[in-house]
Length: 262
Image (cartoon, rainbow, N blue to C red; front, side, top):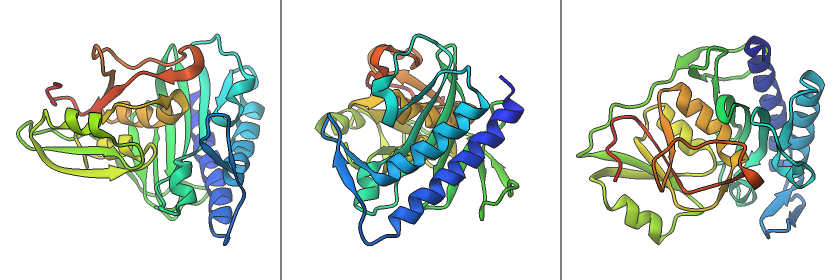
């Protein structure tokens, strides 16, 4: 894979998909349907998926491509693939809370090595460079990248941790787990932005004790890893891997090294 070619494409497609999403977001109403699992899907999900899928398929026709909106039609056998969530945080989109993202990632041998996370309503754009390191680009976002800030996770203080948790899926089990730590403060965020808050050093710990899919996490996980962070399984603290049957993730913990996991 030529990452010097891959990452500018990821960035361009994320921005194009984000523009389509915001066009629909700005309307007084838009179409919402329920998928088979009762989760919502909007015309913005489908429009963004079409933009990204067409661009990736044209550029890398031999690399398997998995997207949330087309997952039911794919049977994945590869450990190296492209994976996309064209609109992560559909509930936030529907409720007009702004915490939704475009996510594109490249997984190599089960590890998300490169990715982009774009939050169009918040004007935040995070991605990995060809060497795998992570940056945040300062907008406005044009054809040529603007100023880049290298990302590095925090040096955590285990006596005063900053924790980020899900905005839409937080539950008692998550609160019980967080209570094991000495917490300075907590914040909530939707979608893959939680990984990015770890990558920027704005948070130290993100536990997820709930169902997620690989397309929900791969891009944010890549950005976090590029900033020096870690994502591990909740049960045994081994690295979270990708290419699992059905693309279901186990419970996991994302964190800055130095956090003493409980």
